[in-house]
Image (cartoon, rainbow, N blue to C red):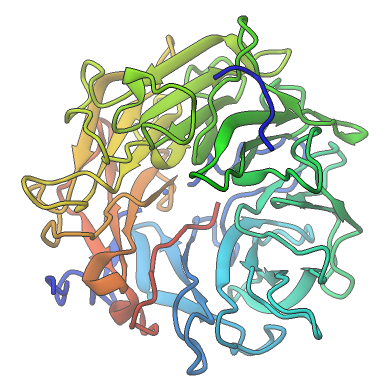
Length: 495
């Protein structure tokens, strides 16, 4: 668009209740690539060398309160995730600040990194509905600290106020000033490291993701991700934003780039094409080096055919994924790739409502050094079953992201536990992480609509040829000893 401003389903009894099982191993947003010089952002909470998986259930019940929210953490091992070795983290857990209350939505935003530099990854948890004093639903960010025994204790590092809410949904971690200490960015906050367990962040300030933002015409944030796009050793920040529209879902979906420098993040710059139109934004964002040239690339999930734009491109029908490649000067808008379900090699057909482009994540699934991309399509009909959902894995290569060699899975794929059912929303979120440390990222997929919104997560092991349904497994609240009813388990992963 032109640049202008605008005023009974199958309960997976055997497959999900797998306490004690070891399931095939993953990373959201190419975890581990956020910034050279900073302490590791690998999700290793107990320092055993294996990445761990944090799963959000922000609508889950804790302490008897509806939608108070919780996070399930499953620890990695040489054989993958070990569901016997798990933790349930809520505001009722020992050492976690505050108490569980209705509509806190603890887990509404998850990120990780070694914030205090002790060699153990820490978990950043958002609670957008948290009350602070007399100010209602103004939000908080809490760090749960890693250690040899795993996660324990916590510190609230950001609190909202009546006129300055914390919006924690898209918290992400990176070294945005190149000082060797990790920082935390959310939709509207920048917390600068180093962090301590007593004082929290060294400094905290507001984060502006749109230089044209004004009080009477604010932007909304669709996603935020971090990566070294220009390969200068300092993490950059990228945001997908749009302008709200009272008459529709919003307008002006666009991409903002904030260059990381030794002085901190630069002012946001809108990515525009040669004809002065915006590079289209979307709803999910991954960062990874898909062409192995040393520069992190932007992977933009655009799951909706139309989101208020003046015209709808045919290529957007059913959703698409767009890539903007990194360069020494940052995102290179002259080098882009667009892939949808009609692209050669991609399984399926583009259809209205597929929502292909949801929950994108980047990671190397076959160990060839190229970042690959997991793409959810939670609105995909499987046969005549509406919104059962599917996930595709697209391959990176020297020429960039391609449909060649893509694979797709649903709950009706042979070897995958469960059955595709209406409104499962399989593929709503994905993450790619090498949990078993074999050099290949495994695929994890959530279906937060599974079993009347109880939710579940599927694990797909990776081979030299990429992810496979063979040996895949599923787990959910029942198998992890977590609260069950309407938890939306899998409504996001740590990233």
